[in-house]
Image (cartoon, rainbow, N blue to C red):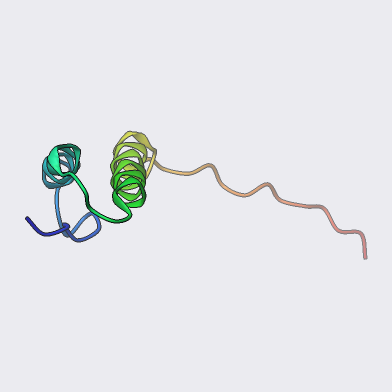
Length: 67
């Protein structure tokens, strides 16, 4: 199995499959680093989905400037 591309190119499901695959590997150099990277990408996907990406933003506060 090959590491998925970053989200949104590959889905959260692909990343979870990759993380599960890493749990079953043995004697692979830097496996902990690969697991951390997969966990970080899954967390980023969850944050992006739960965030307010599509929500309207409050307008910037106008600043009174005395001339």
